[in-house]
Amino acid sequence: MKIIRAEKTAAAGIAAARAYVYSEPEPAPERKNITKEEIPAETAAFEKAKEQVLRELGRLAAEDDFFAGHLKIAEDFTLSDSVISKIKTEKKNAQAALAETIDEFAQMFASMDDAYMKEREADVRDTGKRFMGALKGAAASVPQMPQEEVVVAAENLYPSDVVRFDPKYIKGIITEKGSAVSHAAILAAGRGIPVLTGVKGILQKLGEGSTVCMDAGEGTVIIDPDGQTMEEYRKKIAAESDRKKALELLRRKEPVTKSGRRILLCVNAGSTEEVCCAVGMNLDGVGLFRSEFLYMENDHFPTEEEQFQAYKKAVLCCQGELTVRTLDIGGDKQLPYFKMEKEKNPAMGWRGIRISLDQKEIFKTQLRALLRAGAFGKLRIMFPMLTSCEEFREARAVTEECKRELERENIPYGRNVPTGMMAETPASVLLADEFAEEADFFSIGTNDLTQYLLAADRENEKTAGRYDHFHPAVIRAVERIIRAGQRAGIRVCMCGEMAGDEAAVPILLKMGLDEFSVPAARADAVRKQILEYDKQV
Image (cartoon, rainbow, N blue to C red):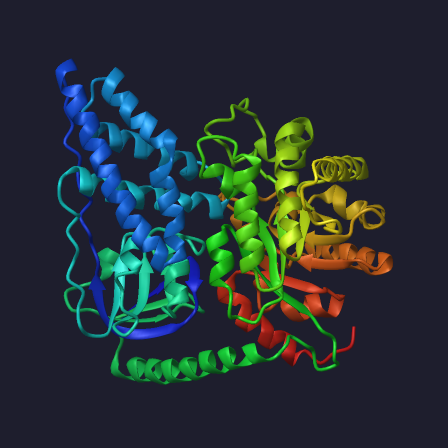
């Protein structure tokens, strides 16, 4: 019996079954140089493959919103232009040109520090795999899934893999790579499958016919358990099943503490598709909509109309209020079509609101689209990375300018769209009272706030252990922001990882936090914590 500790829980849950090693061969490209006369044929082959992929992804996107992102990647003009350019100017065959382009796109995301952004690499490679299969004239081989209960073990998984998994048989997933915010993990969680990622060396430790017990909540994997351990896990599985059913039943109840205080419960989303997926969970809305994905999935700055249509769809789909964070690029989030100078310390460089205020036409395009979408439902605008009240005033002044323009142009818009801010810098903590007099609401971004306060990069293996949102400095900073909001009578939300940490929920409730915005997979557990909280603030 071997016991392994996992790095990351992507979706909590317990499973015990035979291990099934899942390995889907990547369609390897044929690489060769071509002649001038062969260019038209190679270009035509790529265009034909693209048509096939667009048809496939169009069908999948209609069935599952998660594949809308893959469809956007496949439609990206930058990707097509890059492939065709390599064929025409570098005289590479279509397969080699595609493989190199996919690598370049994937590396752009892989080089980012933000875990959520980093995991978009998998979406690019998943789409590239589909392209390569079409280009080679045959779909990639699909492993035959067993018709019995198993725990899948793999080096990594793509969303295309997960949609093949039947929850009736796939009781758990363990991967050596990937993260909790990958689309594959989110899809699996939505299907009720426990997922552990970052379990290094798991494939080497599994033998032929190995049995696996996993507790994704505790981050534990047991290989070839003895009879007593197996029986213990069977009991834990039954108890966990009862717990999940009980949590889902709690969705009928509003998140109200035992003392009668109504708490707002929202989800974080990175796309319109994720907003739509949260419908039916009886939530108060989306507390963080990361708008940068509209920019990162394009080959150009999205136009006002393109953004308006996306925000409008999100507002109409949202169950409650939609809070959109304005463009937050810079640092680790780069756009291929927007050249930025390399910075020695990008986390403290030109990013977030600084870029928006320096590039006002880009900012105004987004604000106009957001204000127009605000005419169709409840929408709030949130500015990131503020360090001075002057920045907030300037951002709000640009917003008012956009309102006047829309008024003159007789274009409908949300006249009373609230404007708030992310409280995520040490300056925003120290100036919380001053900011509270200016902003309509606060949203505490504990991920960046913790890094800045503790000078500890959570993605750096040597400092990740020092990154701790329970550190006294972080707790005091959070409390200071909440108190400032209370004194000014504005709502205070938290959208960072701390909000979804069950151990942190009672602490935050005691401080008086008004709103929790968490990943959809954690919303039910947070609701339970709120319902059971019985202390007066």
